[in-house]
Image 1 (cartoon, rainbow, N blue to C red):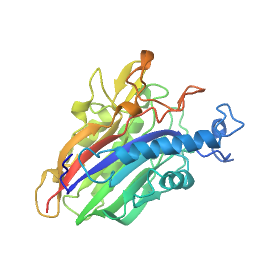
Image 2 (tube, one colour):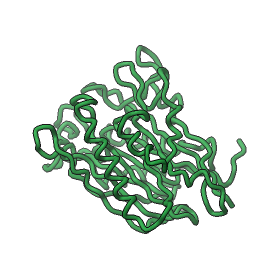
Image 3 (cartoon, rainbow, N blue to C red):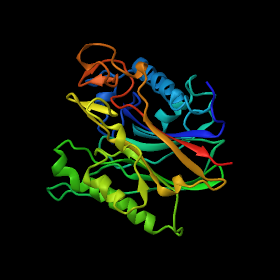
Image 4 (tube, helix red, strand yellow):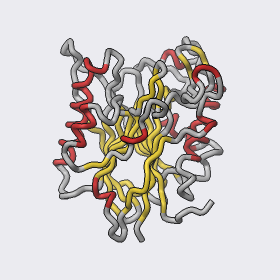
Amino acid sequence: MYHHKNRYSIAFYNLENFFDTKNDPHSLDDDFTPDGDREWNESKYSNKAHKIARAISEIGMEDSDVPPVLLGIAEVENKQVIQTLLNTKELQGVDYNFVHFDSPDERGIDTALMYHSKHFTVLDAETIPLLVDNTNGERDYTRDILYVHGRLHAEEVHVFVNHWPSRRTGDVDTSYKRIKAAETILHKLETLEEDNPNCIIMGDFNDDPNSESIRTLMETGRFINPMKKLLSPFSGSANYRGEWSLFDQVILSHTFLDYGVGTHSFIKAEVFAPKFLQEWKGKYKGNPFRTYAGEKYLGGYSDHFPVYVVLEENL
């Protein structure tokens, strides 16, 4: 297949509880230990690492010569599980490095940014705490927002990797938390020296493209959300009780519609849902082939499909 040499993908993938097998006394990871409810052991861990690595190695390869140059990931337990991923035979040949900080999430899951060292240089990275309370006034220890300032080829970009508070207790009840997350990003952008920064805001937002939190970003007029058209009654990035959602999104600043030399232009957005990532039969046919359904081990990849955008470097 003919590729434009200068096309690259930028992806996001929620890895569904990617834990190692060791018990961390500080987090609620007990299910994911050999003695826990899910009997999470080395062979299951290794199977998952190889599966996820295979998926990553193929994202965007219809359009590009290399796997994603930037890949935001969510639901990783620690640095070790990311390292395990990078050491798999599927990804060994790719010059990946990553940025990860431990976050205060009570389940012990974090976000991280994997980047292809030949294409991206980190200039600066930090976590931005998301300070939200539950309705009872106690702090909700949720994931920080990962902020990475770097250089994609010759162009400076500001990347935000998100895993916003979940809807566990209902979407309306928890909506204010995700609106606060959107405001937290906008606040950070206001502190940047640049007038028109190149931004990539990716993540599992636990909200669809038309929800209030995402609209909070969009109403500033700074962004395009190329993912919007990818949600339909028959498609999305995750499926809960028979309903598709598109909580996984990559949102870009308008600057990715420019064509100046050295810039990157938006080409297209996709949900990456090849056959091997899907359930093949039964009532869940076509859904993401997940690792667990409740406590039942299925041995799949993740309960989310990855999403990605393709950019063209203007030479």
